[in-house]
Image 1 (cartoon, helix red, strand yellow):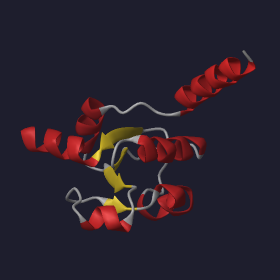
Image 2 (spheres, helix red, strand yellow):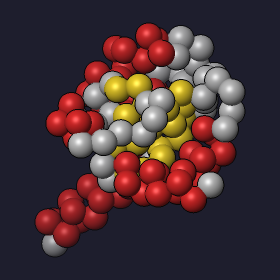
Image 3 (cartoon, helix red, strand yellow):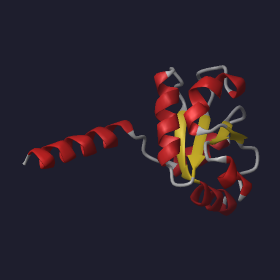
Image 4 (cartoon, one colour):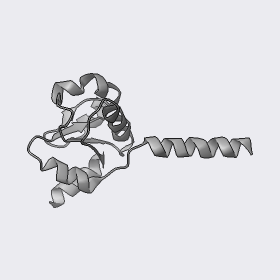
Length: 118
């Protein structure tokens, strides 16, 4: 019973802290003139393909490097990774720093496909 309660608590905590992917908002945000697109994947993943115009900052370094690309905390920012999980972690980090317009665009391939359909 304790294991079940602990598992349930962990599941609820993870879902509460992880930002949901929002591809529609990501596409809308990318059309704003000062929007910043950030790829938080590894260099190896990026070497296999990336979205045009994306800046590359690993999710683990985003808090320390975001001011290089978006010093204004009201800058619209779209994050993506392979599946959306690391983008969610990066989103949480940026929001904790006070960034107000951060969108988790989800996975690279899904966002790429959606951009091609526009």
